[in-house]
Length: 299
Image (tube, rainbow, N blue to C red; front, side, top):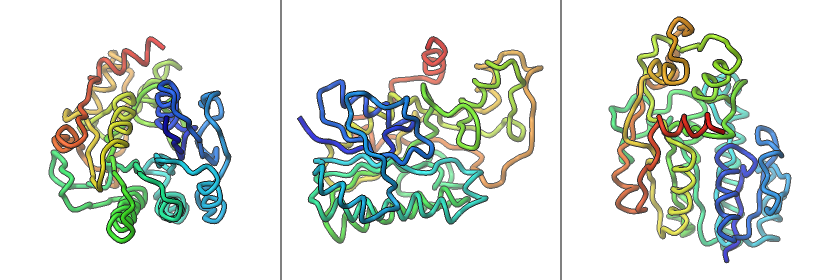
């Protein structure tokens, strides 16, 4: 039985990962500052500590105390649009916080760190995105995740800290944020449909996204925790859907679709080449978008 620490363990993806590890009998410590995570997501069998990763000394003291074998780093301020309004906060909570965590792990002999990255750093690279492409961040959120990856790579090379980076492609599923600045596109559509409102589609809806179900993301984390050595992996389905088609899946009546302004700060299309994850991690997506949406709707 291993001891794991999960930053952001009250959040959308993190809480699902906590559940999966608890279910198989592992000891799990959840670290979260409860800024966007929810206490209702906490698994009763996990050990919880409220801690902000920007507190470097407090974080190191905590890692020294619990001595985890491996650390899953999911804590971050997500979403693109709010990062544009407050880039300093996003840098502090993402890049600076990641550095603090890596330093604490290095100083305490942590065997493995699995970092939750983002496909947003690819920007306007041609699709399908491959891990060898040069990042082209178009907004502060993407840049903060790219900087975090650079810290991970440097710690791997300079301090021999074993780090694996997973670049997520638009994760969705139960517990996703449904409203506010941190909502995902599927979360927004589902909330609007449930409330009887029109679905608000950014731009003309022709932009496309590789949408990945949360259960596939959780499985990727667990497989990555067994992998040795530095690596960067795309965690996406390898298929893409136009946003207007996603809207139709949730609300078939197109008269209830409203179109808005185009966001130049977001990529026109995202699509993962997941060959490397298949070959190195033994991971492949098991959920189609249709199956994932149906799974959410059935509750």
